[in-house]
Length: 476
Image 1 (cartoon, rainbow, N blue to C red):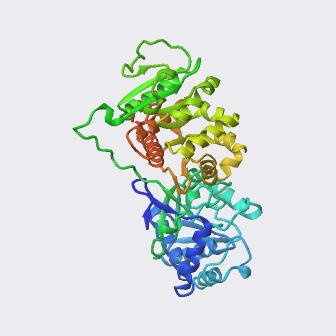
Image 2 (image 1 turned 90 degrees about the vertical axis):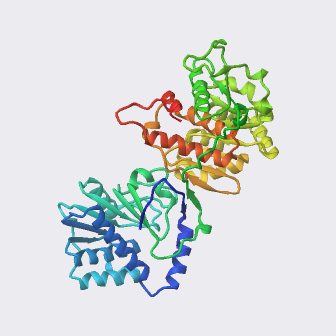
Image 3 (image 1 turned 180 degrees about the vertical axis):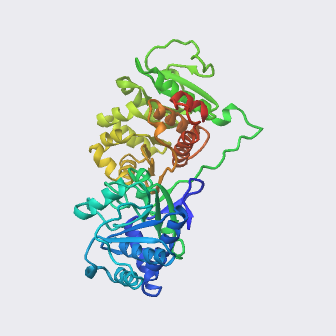
């Protein structure tokens, strides 16, 4: 059993592939083996995370997730814990493996209680597993409300009950810990998954890893880029931040500052509203230029940061000529609104220059012609669809940012927190992606590395100190 941490990549498996692996493993093992291993792992983790717990409530559902709970309950009872077991469903209709586990509970002297305990120290949430695709209703919904209202530690078996394993959506139990069994599920790490799953653990149940069958990856830390002694500013590329319409010049400055602090060789600030040619206060390294006079073919451009409607006038040439391109904010809104710009983006992708889109969910919805709710309902599918539509890399921002590209498995970023929910942090991310492209990273690697570094900076932010976008750029 391992705790899932952000210090390495992890393969993720959707429900369909998990079911395939489960069927193959079960066929090669004696009956009930996987459930027995799952129950033992759950019981051991319950003891580890709540070693002094007196009362353990094991909330079991009507399927095999409940069977895992039965197995865990029997072990905990044998180890001397006070176990209260509840069953939402008819024991006569349990699937075969769960029915066998239920008989084991009965043999251990455990009967189903009609009500949850009035107080409990730890709850094992074994109500619903990866097979659930419907909203919580009736008795199950009531039990989840009781779990969420309780004061104790909650250990979810496989996924918190009610959470969609593939997408991380749905009203669900709020777990302190989640033990993902056999495979890691993508929904634990994006959308509502990170808030609902708590600390995630993984047990492969003794089944060898099958990374080649993964449906996505939880990204690990990017390699440390070496800066050779025998190098110069030209070795790390030129970045131009294009944006900053009237009243929004700060957005472009933030993108440029991020590129500068991330190590770009030279950084140009190209405002779309006049700000004068004087050095930017605190950032004398930035060179203020008119984008029309720059050699776009040599520049790695972050475009759209605070660009307003003015960005539409410069986008056609940037799409046609930029060496590499990060499209953010108002650039994405302009493309969503104008078929000619959409055509220009597709033409650029056909030619092959690196291009990364960095939408938040509303911007992604505009580009896909759907609602924000539809984007958030399946973030991996949305990011993948957007990448396929325009033939480029997409970094869909949000809890568990998703990086996707045509022909590649999507990645979910494991870093970041709610400190990033403040104005300008998206501009910082766009500038960081541009700097990594300028240094020679391929677009998928640049987007994944930028998301990881951006989030990691927030994760390591000093307690008691407000995170602002300007400070974040300087911390890269």
